Amino acid sequence: MTLPLNRILQGDCIDVLNSLPENSVDLIFADPPYNLQLQNDLFRPDLSKVDAVNNGWDKFSSFAAYDSFTMDWLRAARRVLKDTGTIWVIGSYHNIYRVGAVMQDLGYWILNDVVWLKTNPMPNFRGVRFTNAHEILLWAQKEQGAKYTFNHKAMKALNDDLQMRSDWVIPLATGKERLKTNGTKAHPTQKPEALLYRVILSSTNPNDVVLDPFFGSGTTGAIAKKLGRNFIGIERDKKYIKVAQKRIAAITSAPAEALDLPEKRNQARVPFGALLENGMLKAGQKLTYAKGKREAIILANGHLKCGNIIGSIHTVARELSNAPANGWEMWFYSERGKLKPINDLREKYRKKLKVTG
Image 1 (cartoon, rainbow, N blue to C red):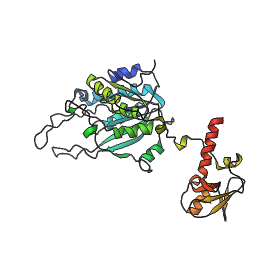
Image 2: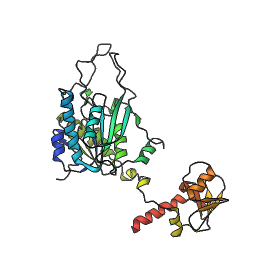
Image 3: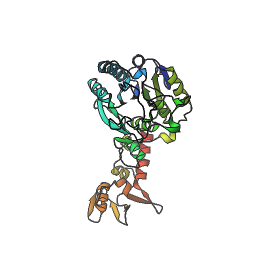
Image 4: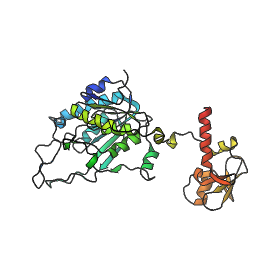
């Protein structure tokens, strides 16, 4: 069976998951029912009714019934996930701890829990509890120790070149982003696009397959298309499918050149000595240090000599700056009277490896 890429499949998520090929998808994002256990309608202080989640799909007869449902869909999801794949599941205090336990029982290995901090949470109108201002995402791999995708550099770049933390401050989907049908919310639990942008950019590569078994209003599909990924949605409510299809049809994918974000860890490692061996630099040639006018001589073994300091490009740079330093970014060679970073030569050598490899 070929994968039904970029389609929304109507039906029960467990039945549909079990009909898909094994080991076929790269990422699963799941926003399952939270089992909120609401007993009565909620009202604001002015007695207006709160538009809370009271849909039938969120109601279960008991915790045991919810646990059984969770076990069934997570087992079916694990079957279709590639051995190198990962899964994200979002929830609140009502369900996420039960979900996490089931995931571990089924053999998933949890990599992170991420806290989504809402900048604009719904207040606790009755004033009997703290305002619930966060939700939790569990990120897990199918097989402990397997290779999986994590675009660390992309996440760092997205965060002003600071390592991305596990607390994500993102507002709820409101205003123009909030989908509406006849003036009312098209879906009660629509997730913000910013949330899915981080999930998909961090955990997949272009053309990967992202599956969402609780597709709802289609946020996962919209962001997958925007980022050049394929999606598969599963949704049983025709009303939500119609909303999602219209939404995704209006999305334009980013051009391929904008999605080529190579992770340094996935690039071929190039030792500095390879530049000497291949004639791109020469023993005895001088390199200029980025800070100040210090120069170093390249030795025949690939080390640098700067005064009394001898060592690798990184060691000598660290000694000169008295701080951690990446030598590829700190040393410059001269070409036709202009100083250029030695990292340019490394990239040229990598391209040569690709051509001849």
